[in-house]
Image (cartoon, rainbow, N blue to C red):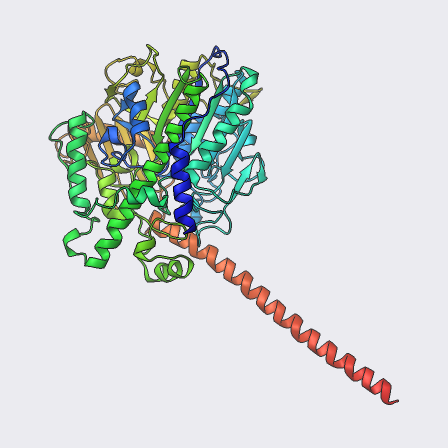
Length: 600
C-alpha cells in the first residue's frame, strides 16, 4: 500500500502544472552546457535510434540537434568518463583499467592508476577558469579520495557516487561489490532522502544547484550522470507497468525489430548484415518460469529508461521556464554498450544474491530487488551491432550521441552524421562552441597531458566525413583492442567475446562486423596492425595475463571483498568470544576472592 501510495503521489506530481518560475535572468555571453550521461545504454536504446520504449524528451533533443551514428566510447564506464572529462585517451588519464577489472599484475603500472590521475585537466577546471559555475550530480567512479572527488577536480557543487553503481531506491550498495553506497556532497559523506529514486534525485539536485547561483549571471556547466540503466535494474512501479504487454516474443525478435527501425531512421545502412551472437540464449528453449522472469526484467529495463527520460524532460522544462533553454548546449551519450553479465549465472552468486534480495519474478525491478538483462536482451539493446559492454566490438563501443543547441545555426537540426567520432572529442567541441580556451598541454605552470580529441564543430555544421579523416585512432581496455582508420576497423577481442585473433571490418557497409576482410585486404590489415602497435607503445598498453576475462575478474573482486568482510566478522566474533571468556574467568576469580575473604 505504501508503494502504491507513493507511486500515485509521484504520478500526481508529474501531472501537476508547472509552477511559475522566477523572471528569466539575462542570458550569459557564453552558452550553458548540460551533459546527460546514461549508464550502460546500448546503441539502439533511444527512440530516435530505434528503441521501442518511450524516450520522447531525449528524442526531442535529437530532432532539435544532431545525432551521431558512428560515435565511440570505451567498453566500460570509468575509462569513458575519464575521457569525457579530459579529452585525453584512457591510458594517459589513468584509466588503463578499472579497480573492479584490473588484474593484480597491472596494479601500479603507468597508466593503470584505476583512478583519474592528476596529470590531466578536467572540463570543469577548464570551464571554471573561463567563468563558469560547474556542477556534477550522480555517478563519478573516477576516484574516491579527497583529492579526486568532483569538487577537487573543478566542480563548485557536486553530489556524487564514487562507485560503479548502487541501489536506485535506497542508500544501499551493490551487495557483494561494495561495503557502502559511497555518496558524498562537496566531499563530505551524504545521506540520501527517504523518497529517493536515482534518476529523479540527480536531476532535482542539479536544478537546485543551477537555481542557487542564478543571481551570479554566470553560465553553467552541468554534468548529470545517471545510474540508469546500470545493474541493478530498478524502476517505479508505474513505469514497469507501462510495458506489461511487451517483450513476450523474446530478444531475437526484438533485435530484428530494432534493426529494421534503425535502418528506417537512417541510423544504419538499409540491409546491413547482422549476426546472431553465440552468447545469446535460444528463447524457444527457455521454460515458462525463465521466460516470465526474462520478460519482467526487460519491462523493468524499459521502465528505467523511460523514468530517466522523464527527468530529462523535467530539466528541459525548468530551463525553458527560467529562460535558459535557448542558450544551452545539450549533450546526451551513453558510457558504453549494454551490460551482458548475468550475476545469477553461477550457483555461488545465485545463493548469495537470493539471501540479500527479494528475487521473486513479481518483484523484479522494484525496491529490494536485484536484476540484470543478461546477454539475450543486451543483444537487442545494441541492435544491429555485435557484442556488448567490456568488449571492443561495435556493440561495446558504439553508443548514441546527441548534440543540441536550440535555434543555433552551428548545428544542423534533425541531421544524422555517420562520420567517426570519439568520446575524447566532446571536450574540445564544447570548448569551441562556448568560446572557452584550451590549455595546450600546460596548466597553472605545470605540464599536463594534451587533449587528444578533435572538435566536432565542422561535423555539427554539416561537413561530410569525420574530423579524424584517415588518421589512426587506437583503443584498448582489458585486452580488447581496436584501431579505427577512415571507414575501417581493426579489432581483437579476448574470450569469452572473441578468440584473441585480429580482424578487419568495413564499418560503413558492415557495422555489425559480420565479414572479416583481413585476408581480402592484406596490405590494409598489415598497415593498421603497425598503427595499433605504435598506439600501444605510445600509450603504455600492457598485455593481459593468460586466461584473463573482465567478468571473471569482477567476480574475483567481489568475492575477495566478501572474503575480507567475512574475515573481519570472524575476527570480531573470535575477539568477542575471547573477551567474553576472559571476562568470565576474571569474574569467577573475583567472586572466589570475595568469598574467600568473607570466610576469613
